[in-house]
Image (tube, rainbow, N blue to C red):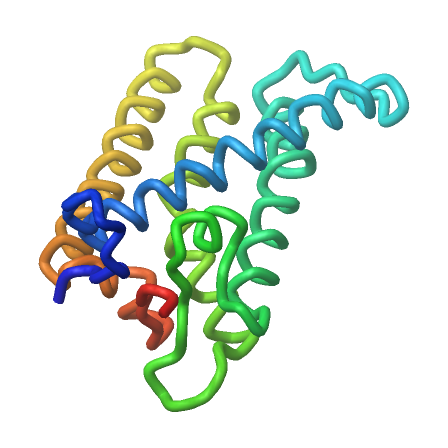
Length: 178
């Protein structure tokens, strides 16, 4: 099913739901980075986090980016609007297919699967010491993350944008706001 918007009089075709989902996610990532990067630099001296090793970089990434990002997506999916700022901007929302609102469990599992490729790429920080085995691990992790992201996109396209892998796991779907 294609996303249908109200006629604008311009004759423009509505964007497919898959495109709207990608735009919403991109908007959310840009918004999160615009907020979290300055905060991270401001807090770095206070938290004494000047990461020099791979492990320290991973710890800083989890503390400053992973945790706030997870909180953002879980709270937004669980909210009455079922939408992040990006979803609201692009006029789409997540909903449960079980005939109830999105539960905490739904929101957490949806976020865990959705952010898995991103979290896998953060693992590269753990292997930042440049040995041959570390480089092989980096290549494997980045390849796996990209493969998962590609699978997510294929599944989303196959369902006309309504569901991706994280929606299948959580029992949710995305639909236009009407």
